[in-house]
Amino acid sequence: MDAAEHFKIKVKLNDIEQPFSLTVKRNSNEERIFRDAAKMINSYYNEYKSRISGLDSTAYYGMVAFLMARLYIETSDSKNELEAALARLEKEIVAYLDEKK
Image (cartoon, rainbow, N blue to C red; front, side, top):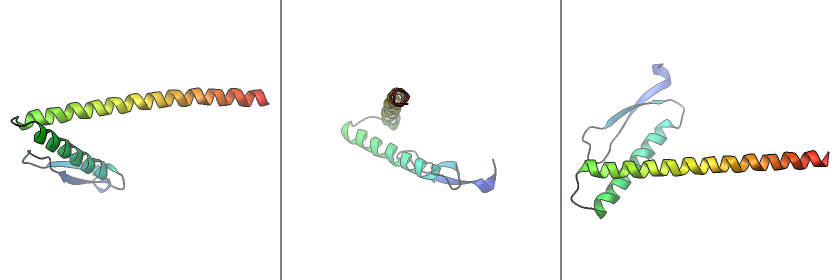
C-alpha cells in the first residue's frame, strides 16, 4: 500500500470509547462512505436505544448489524432483478432491430 495514495481517518461509534482508525484512498469517495456509514450506524443505534431500553451496547449494535445485513441483501436482490430486467429488455431491443433490417 503506497502511503502517498492513502491517508488515515478516525470515525467514532456511539458507545465505543476508542475511535476507529481507517485507511482510505486519496481522491476517492471512501472517506465519505466510511463517515456516512458511521453516521448511519450511530443513527440506528440511537433509534433502537430510544425505543428499547435496558439493553447493553452489544445488543444495540447487534440489532444494527441485522438491519444493515437486511438492507444489503434487499439491495443486492433488487440489483439482480434490475440486471435481469435490463438483460430481457436488451434481448427484446436486439430482436426488434433485427426484425427491422
